[in-house]
Image (cartoon, rainbow, N blue to C red; front, side):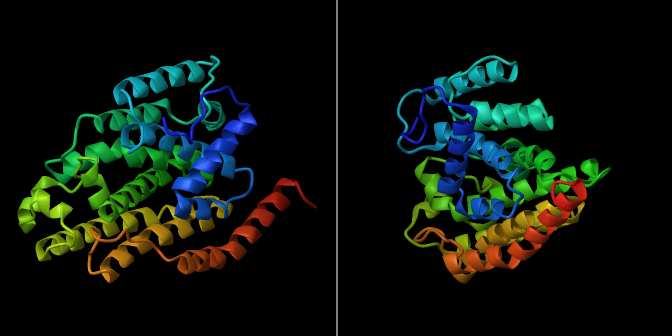
Length: 308
């Protein structure tokens, strides 16, 4: 693993803190949005993100050396032991497994995520968008459904909220794929469906050029509209959450959706630059939702009797 992860035993508190730092370092936009959640929810969201990032580092890190398949096998074995109540010296798993147990997170979602991580070790192309969706079901959609119990659907709304949560995970993942075309190619992977490359006359080698061809720009414009469909399908789920979770998800929605707009503003150049929402814009989105987040948190604590 990279130097970010320690392999000595840690306390539960230290495990949650490590997950928080992983989120802050590797997912700045999402981390900023999580600061809009009530304080008690944040560690659990960070634990889920931290575990996902931990596994992702095994298959994606440019700096990791050694047998990635064996490392992923070892993580899977440690996780199975921890979920069964066994002891582990893994630094991320104490926080992750406590969150899974506390919120009754479906173990099938965890297994689906690990299957997609394993696919990254052997699969580097996807023929169709349906094929890519199969991969994204484990790498992204289940992240949304694992987060859902922490975010708290309104009473009786858990089933209705599940599909929008899946769609938001898919929207975020596809946004990342469009932003990271060059970086993914450097790892030997192409997440744009091959049928779409053929449709627009884009060759795989075009993804490694210093600047996008006209055909690639057209392909990216097509995929951006596809991502926006996922965003629209996700939007109806926000109001199905408890009010104190809504500002976080609305902010994350705007931050990630804003990446698509930045790609368009850059004339679809995702090869020569790494597109990002400017820091000032990120802070403005955060500030706009902060008042609503604070008000919702106070209201929920009043109702629960935690404050007078």
